[in-house]
Amino acid sequence: MPRVLFTPQLRRFVDAPEHADAQATTLRALLDSAFLVAPMLRGYVLDDQGHVRPNVVIFIDGRRCTDRVRLADALAPDSTVHVLQALSGG
Image (tube, rainbow, N blue to C red; front, side):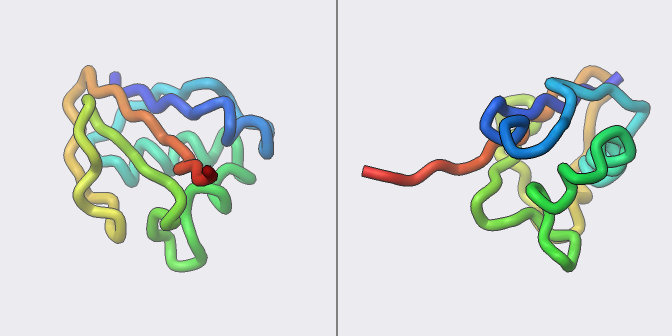
């Protein structure tokens, strides 16, 4: 079953699990399942149109997701998805 993991930086701002598992075949379905558990997380990951925010990057099995709008990237039954908040500074 695919698993999504959230970085400690995201969990600092919203009460969210370290990870969530769900029967999902697309990135959108997996994230929607995680948002059911932690609804406030949606606003940190997605914008008002449901697209990935510019300051968020998502990796599926070590590769950057390709569809930041529809989130239609396919997941394998054993996929691992990392949701990271891009950090800047200097």
